[in-house]
Image (cartoon, rainbow over all chains, first blue to last red):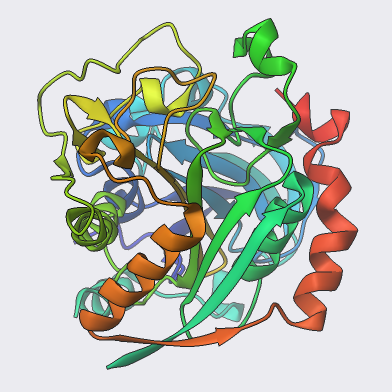
Amino acid sequence: MRPNDRKYTKSHEWVKISGDTAIVGITDFAVQELCSGNEGDLVYCDLPEPGRTLEAGETFGEIESVKAVADLNTPVAGTVAEVNVAIEEHLEILSKDPFQEGWMIKLSPKPKNLDELDLLDAAGYEEHLSAEKH
Amino acid sequence: METWRLLRTFDAEPGFNMGLDEALLEGTDERPTLRLYTWRPAALSLGYFQRLAELSPVARAWPLVRRLTGGGAIHHENELTFSIAAPLDHALYRGEVAESYLRVHARIARVLATCGVVAEPRGARRLDSDDDTSAMCFHRSTSIDLAWNGAKGVGSAQRRKAGRVLHHGSIKLATSALEGPIATVADAGTSLSPAAFAERLVAVWEADGTTFEAEEPSATELAHAQARAGWFSSPAFLERR
């Protein structure tokens, strides 16, 4: 079971509220899709500069594996407050710990309550993954 | 039988080629689209994240574009280029990226077999065409790349965006000035034009159960491609890295 202290998107991002901050990353499933368990297959990650304002669903960055470039989309609107620059140099973090150390951006979110948004809880995300596999 | 859309756009300008693929990626057609195309003039395309400075001065002298897809540089000469645009939940693309490559490559290998080419995923071996110092796609290989005669013969890369995928590929009919000793269809003694190879591909995929509806790009797609053509060869995009 994935962490139930956050919400998920069908496109495999997660968002967690911590105080006045929304923390955004991608799930282990997204990482697995890109690199099939070979952490060395992740080759580049482009994250935004702090201060950028994002709408919900907007692309905030891109990640490249050996065989695919994929967009990174924010589940919530807000202004980028902090970026996990360590990822850009150490992409293996995403394979090892996508839900904690592998966070990507911290936002000052417009909505403070994720329940207002059309997002999945952990159980709903698991159900979505099961449906996607079939 | 599954119905796909088929576009043939031969001898198109490099920036237009990238613009039309972008239009297909951003499109809404639920049918998968197979686009078969060639380039005039022959051009070199950079991978989306590739540094321009990686290219040799000789390579940089060719007409240049940057692709939306990742990977290394490709010299689009003596090849059939293909793109597939489809919803990400299509059976060909569902699940891990690597598995989707194997499915697409299996379809291409069946076409190559009609030319006498026995193409297989590279697996764990190292290829004679591998060169760690080269910026060229065909000089870098992964276990899922199609190879024959100890060299890489099909280059491909994907872009995944907003629930859709664009899969680019280059099938080498003969080698190019910048790619040297790579695997080509000509290795098997089969000399085919890109258009002739394209017809074989369509025939084999149809025999495998795909029905193609041959169309021209829509007015909307053409307008997008023409409006965006300049961007893909612009200094701003080429020098983004």
